[in-house]
Amino acid sequence: CVVSGAYGSLAGRTAGVVAPLYRATFLVSGSPTAGGPLNGQIVFATNDPAEGQVTVDVTGFSNAPVLASNPTAVNFGNVVQGWTTEARAFELRNTGFGELTISSLSFEVGSSSQIRFAEVPTLPIKISPDDPPVIVSVFMEASVLGTQNATILVGTDGIAGHLGQGGIGRLTASGVVVACEVGCPLANGKPKC
Image (cartoon, rainbow, N blue to C red):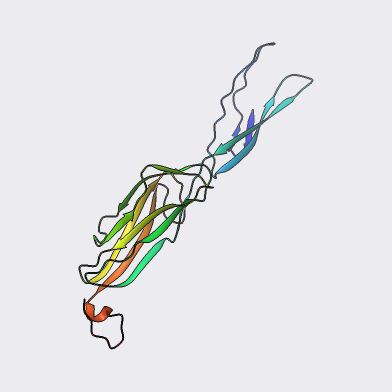
């Protein structure tokens, strides 16, 4: 018996005997390296003089969802101390094969507490490749002067993609909290914050 194709290969399996008018069941499993449709063949060598070998086509589908986001980072720029920004959105999509489950959204330890979630979907949520994006938005509430950075961790059942290793995607948000004098929107104006 020889199995080959997108499933991998199994060669030289132990011979077996199937009595006349009987049947045998074979379990075929695989470890695909990519998502999507899979095709292969199983070739049985026989002692039948009329059919020295029998070829059976094997098909399947590999679920390999991939988390993608547009954008992958947001920058609030300079934000005057005491102000709150408008929310900025991440559009999460599945660019792989099969359903993607988003199971968690959280901030990585060490992220600025001044960057917060504005909109988060009810979790878990499943996304097919043809579904509209899932929106996750964040805002910045500027209270302490200085650069503020946050990493948003997106827990999924996806395989590795450009957002990180399989299982966890990473998005970033940043901004700089500035004093009223620095952030005054009018040139030569007197700040009143």
